[in-house]
Image (tube, rainbow, N blue to C red; front, side, top):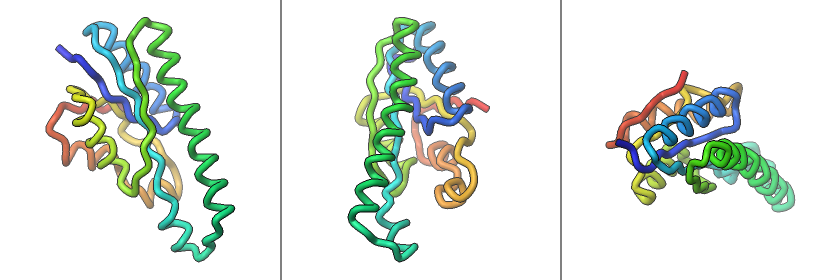
Length: 146
C-alpha cells in the first residue's frame, strides 16, 4: 500500500517512537523511508534578540547540523536494523512544516508519520504545532504517533 514514508524527526523521545513505528510500517509494506530534520532558520531569532554576531551564528548553525546528523543517524540505524531502505535529508527553513511538505512532494512520499508534539519550552511556543500545520496543508495521509 505505501511505497515511501516520510518521517520528520526532532530527536525527542516521542519522535524516536514515531521513527520506530514508521520503520515497522515500512517493513510490513515493503516501503522505503525518508527521514527529515528541519533546522529552524536562526537569522530571525538572532536579529530579534539583537545579538547578531557572525561567529555566534556560525557556531549555532554548526551545532544544529551536528544535532540533525545525530537525529537522522537514529533513523538510518533503525531502518538498517530491519532491512528497510532509507534516505535522509536535512533542510533549513523558517517554516518546518513547509519544508516537510515540499520534501514529501519532491520525494513522492505517500505517508507522513510524525509525533503529535516534541519540542518543549520556548521552541514549542515559537514554532507552534508543526504537526497541526502539516495536517492542515497536506494532501497525503498523516499518521500521528502520540
